[in-house]
Amino acid sequence: MIALIPGLIAGIGIALVIAAVVPRQPQLAAAIERVEFGTPETAVSDAEMDFRTRVGTWLAKRLPASTVPREDLRLINKSVESYYYDKALSAVTGFVIPMLSGLAGQALGYIAFYIPTIIGIPLAVVMWLSVDQDIKKKAADARLEFARGVAVYLELFAARKRGTTATDALESAAEVGNSWVFRRIRQALHRARYAGVASWDALEQLGGDINVPQLVEMAKIVRLNGERDASVYETARAKGKSLRHELLNREHEQANTDSERLQVPLALSLGIYAGIILTPMIINLFTA
Image 1 (cartoon, rainbow, N blue to C red):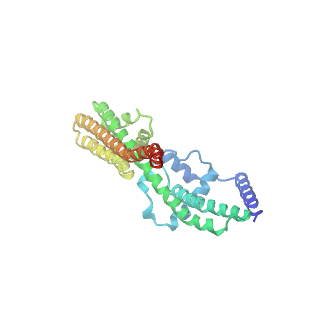
Image 2: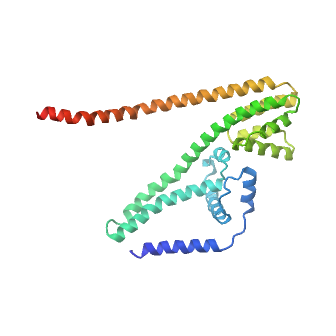
Image 3: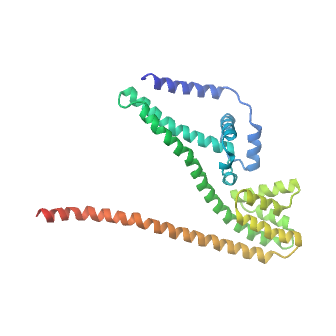
């Protein structure tokens, strides 16, 4: 048992060295996905991407597809294979850490091996589910940021609409910003131009794919202008302002909610401090 842990570490080290030395073929599908969806994982090497893709693909084929938060994954530029790989890695980490602790404890004669290993089973389940919560939170933050970007983009479109077509105004407004929101919009517009699809249809599809209703509503406003050649300048500016006010009110409500949540721990802290100060005085009073 004492030699087991060093042997395990040495085996992992040898496996990593062999994996680094063996040449890998570049993954064409992963490269195309990075180009199309905005390079979500450009810092990952080809070898690691190949391993992640194989693990994620294997899990995706054997687990129900209805549990995958596809809209959130599209919004944060994360593939389904990477999503399953992160879940598997988190679960394995939650299971292996108690098991290694049990091995070390049994080698030193402190605790039986199976006790920490049993604890690792529910910990692995919790770690598996924690990935969904993390993605949900990231997607909520990204969705709010995307809505802010749509409000700015709508007013930029309205400012550039006079004297131009709706498609030119959409593309010109999208070239102004450098944030990831504007990059996603530019990518959708470029694909629409090459595919011969109307720009507003591409924006509406993008808004539906990532569940951003503000972008869908903007696409409907632009469609009214593109199909009927109606003046949409005032409508777009009014919608952009109203969207900004709506988001600002939502942030104020969230700030008020956070302030109310802080009142309970603050009251508990004050109670603890008061108890620390008053307890010696009360004890001295009764002993006297």
